[in-house]
Length: 353
Image (tube, rainbow, N blue to C red; front, top):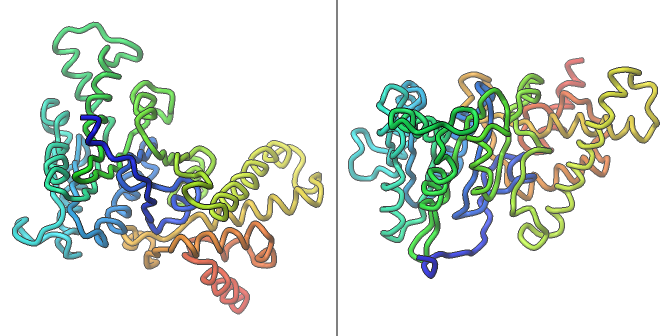
């Protein structure tokens, strides 16, 4: 009922620079991770589980909806290793894992995990609810719809797409008893954000983190698009003047760089004014500084994961925007945590040159 809803606003610190700075998450809010195939949604959701769920006192629920069984298995064993869960899921476990994977019938894929999260919330818990992948819920609905003989709507989806999505999303809510903070990975078919499935979920979310193939191609991970990702929380009233101003400055520099890219491609850097050359240099450093080594990707990258506090993130980007680090080379900013690490890396690079 409406009188049980609780509209308080509190930031959720993830330790991931690009998210905390440009599209901050809210406790008890709904967060969507949008991305095509292979740009890093699952790795990002696992890092969020690592950073938030492990330090979070309450319960977490992970719903694997129509995704790879192998990933579910990996996650289960990772939780046991890191002490979040006990083997066999007995006393002392903190995360419920519910799976309706790719090989399950559509009925199982469409109704996974949410009841568990609601039950914990009604016991007065602050619950973290991770879903990988909401698109499979829509896909399952579309399969069932076809079996029922309904006439499909746009792009062959079920005619009840918006209603189905609304019914699911409205259950993920914070009440006066407890909260559900949900992080949902949303597959974007053919990288098209206007496809009805991802487009329907936009309206329900407090923060959207868009993963971009063009950023992943540059080798910048997490491949979050700093200009496409949004959050209702990025307002001076919520995050404070300083954070808001730094975030907007960063976006302004990146937007200017994006606008100049055509000129650079055709005429080259030499045709730019001195001011624009400086903007481009800063933008390229900012782009690289938005990358960060993840704990869960340590096995692939070989570099230990970093958790960066919000204050350090703001300080680092403020310095970059003000030009305090213009003298450092670009590679120094790639895959580091705080700005101090970038300075240290620059010294190492200079020493080895």
